[in-house]
Image (cartoon, rainbow, N blue to C red; front, side, top):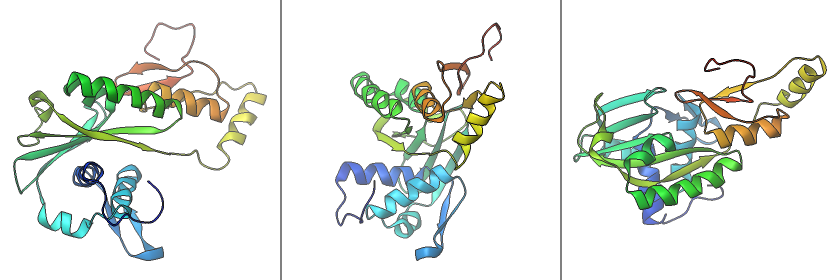
Length: 218
């Protein structure tokens, strides 16, 4: 989501961005050139996207303070937040986790979009909502209403490609371990000059390329 803020974001886009802002563990501070993200950069990017699309974050947080928050956990694969106003819980996390708990038709359509985004090397998050209060036993048990998918560009740091090339010339095998979707890992790996096939190794983990000659999860 780039460019100037939209004066009137579409209803679906607006609801998606508001949900992503409420199911969030970061904050924006400062103004103008001094604007900074306090917390996770991915959550910060979602806040910036909402702000650029015209969502008044200050009013949103003032009118919907959190009642209960389930922090992100890599094993669980999502986070959830229940605002004080109303009995709605917003959930944000790994698409492969959340899509298993939404309507079958919505899940099938979302998986097609997810595949295209991931093949382009984009990091993808799913955003959904459900009734009840966020708790450790999980809002997912009650079923989810999918609000949408968010795709983010997470480019490698300057010098990474050159460093990998030097490792290859020195005969060093380079592997990438990530919590991203396997197709995303494969696309990023190819851009970095790491060839091979991505595979899931452990819960919420992808190794690219997978090691050979071993029966261990790695």
